[in-house]
Figure (cartoon, rainbow, N blue to C red):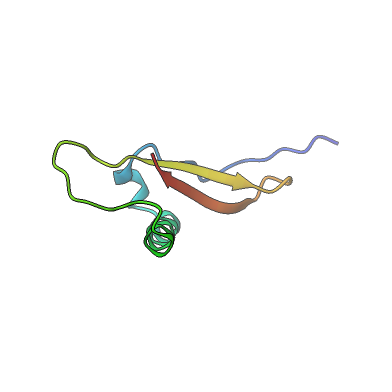
Length: 73
């Protein structure tokens, strides 16, 4: 028997696309809180550079989404 997995959801390519999905918004908020709590980065306002989010879906062996993962690049 052949197992087929059909993914309905995909990783966003930019912030605008991610902002339309509540799962990604929740995940980004958690990441920002972790950065603030662990003091791993200093968040500053800069007009010459923009922070770039990198999005990844973590999957279980059966193909189900186990985690929405992102990081600031």
